[in-house]
Length: 246
Image (cartoon, helix red, strand yellow):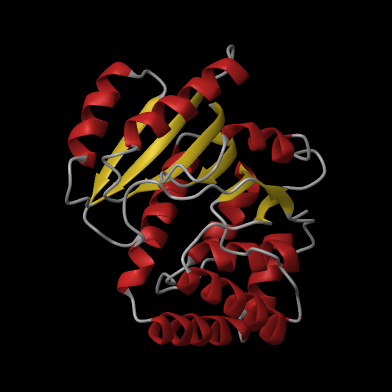
């Protein structure tokens, strides 16, 4: 059993992956010196040297778990990371990204609330991202409010702490086929099932390396696809929420 597993997707992050891995594995070692913890990095078919670096790091860093997969997108990598964390019987699962835009010090803001909720979100109060990503976030916030009648500040944020047993319930209710942004659906189901998400303000830094994959997508295609998935899921939401509460 693991007290905590950190799930971290990675795609073409050769310029910062070593720094990020050492940062978070060192954080785990210092924060939980007497507990089993691991950083799970899912290499999502990177085309640069990310895989080579991760394979090397896995031989050197004892609390690092590496999963190499064919490119399936950020959402698919996150889902596979969650599945691995659950396979390891993790009491808590924390998810963040590998782009070095978050700071490990903010973890404690969420960890301190773990006895008050099974699903806790951070919130990028000051967000350093391209305009296209900011637009999508605002679009999704409005869409969720319109379709589900609930307001979530940052439903897709990759800075979230989830109790393992509750994550398993959420994963069992994730729609099929797998949605483009599964973290949004997990957030909606968590809130609708009665969890307090808190929306805790955290630090978000400028991206200094790598590339933003979402820019490759046509803006309207992303928005339309997400809107359709959320609208379709609305018809089944009550059934899923009942199953989670049970």
